[in-house]
Structures are given as C-alpha cells and as structure tokens.
Length: 127
Figure 1: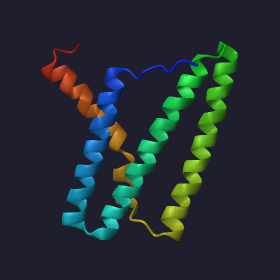
Figure 2: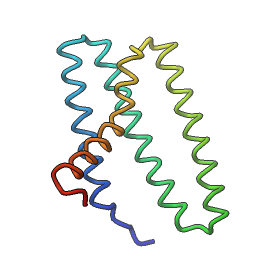
Figure 3: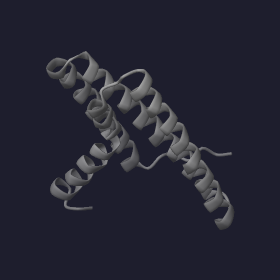
C-alpha cells in the first residue's frame, strides 16, 4: 500500500493546533495554576489524538466502496465516541481534572482550524 501524503493545509492546521495547545498550556500554568493547566494539557492530548484517529479512519474509508465506507466510518465514530466518553468520565470523576481547563484543551483543533481559516481569508485573499 502506497502512503498517501497529507494535504498541506491539514499539516498546517495540525502544526497550528499543537502551537496553540502549547501556548494555552503555558499561559494557563502561569496564570491559573497547576490543576487548570493539567486539564488543558490532558484535553489537548486527547483532542490531538482523536483528530489523528479520525484522519486514519477517513483515509481507510476512502478506499472502500460507498456502503462499506459509510458503515466503516459509522462504527469507528461510535467507537471513538465511546472511548472518549469513558476517558473523559474517568478524568472528571476519578482524577478530578478541572473541567473548564479540560474543555479548553479539547478545543485546540477547533481553534487551529478557525485560526487557519481566518488567516487564509484575511491574509491570503481567501484562496
């Protein structure tokens, strides 16, 4: 199987998301304390792992027929959702992670996508 390279835009979004995650983690540690920063750190890790997992599933589903691809993605979606639910429950209920910090960390990919879209729209002429 030949490895398909990632699109340049996706690579940029991933790099931007990691950068945002690092900055938010550092700022939250300095201004809001260890517990909040730990929530941001763990949430960012989960978000980035889930994004990579989604990419791999989508790449695999493209090679399947339409019906098999839909079923494959639906199964993987519910699998990811269930695993993330169990992990988030354990972090909140058992590890007592700061919920607001966790939510902020879980949004790093969305912040990366939004930042990249704004950059493209404002500075690159909307291409």
